[in-house]
Image (cartoon, rainbow, N blue to C red; front, side):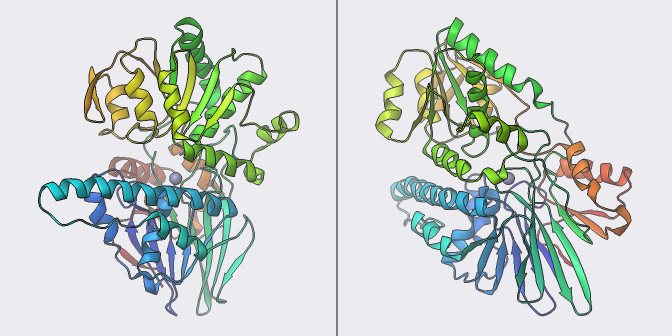
Length: 466
Ligand SMILES: [Zn+2]
């Protein structure tokens, strides 16, 4: 039996690992897209390292595009197997993959205009919205803690990873002649003591563990002060300055955390009478899906919902779908809060809000997530005086604030806490994936110091016999 590491090796996107059993069954763990490297990513994404027609099952840890984003592509290339994931992951994939398909089509359209000017022939998008819709027919969903059997040879079970709605650690028992090999794949691991989702939960003892390491070299601040910091940003911007508070946010997870925090503040009577707009169609759809999956909620929000049946809605909150309603916010001068995607400010409607308000000192831009260094968000937050939006220069006169404690990934102490359910001596090997090189090296050292002796950083297209 072998495992091949086909992506998210020494980097944080493109998650893909292929298990081939002795009998020849091919099980792919995740099928993620590479993101954030400009034109380079397109060729990296098209070169899979396996034949999609040969894949029997795809076990998906969670819906983020860097884990699921190439499912429509392999479907287009002839994948005819079954995608297995939790019910919430399936529902999120339905909206996220369609959205990714639309982005591929629109990016390719823009790219082809440039090619036409250079006298070059057009290229096809890696996949379309229609491909994304069609591939959903391959999905079946399996709830947490229910065993799913694959051809009498492999058993799959999901354990809550507490990272985003539906996220799972994948536990596999694989028959190999007389022995049974147990393999764990953490997917992405969330933080503990969050507001909405449950904590990452323990999983059964494994022989081999494929483990993420995004924050393998970092410690986060606690979430305790986040709500207070959010309230201060609201009061300073909306009550004192009478300006607009713009909160660029990832559409899935982060947006709902902010909405829930505002809901709690409103409920406690601390949030003044200010209009709050969620202006991102994907955030609106994701919030609706979140409402459908209370089985993923922790005790705190479940208790809150006994008095407040909708934790993602209050009297002054409006969800905006249409382009017209979104545009109407541009000419609105009254103070308000606008939550809009994308979190890194590179795409989506938030760019329009920034273009319209960034040169106004009454505006506050509140960053609640990570911005990759080349993105517009990173340029604004690091203090560039002028930035380019839609090809035009804009002076940055808006106030900038950051709340760092919102993070979807656990830090290295949380990762250690997560694997404390494992008996060290029984672990034959930990393979570290999904992290930048520095984070991975640091995490490997930390694991060694803590007594996990057999640890290896997986290399791109490395194939190991297990
Ligand atoms: Zn993720």
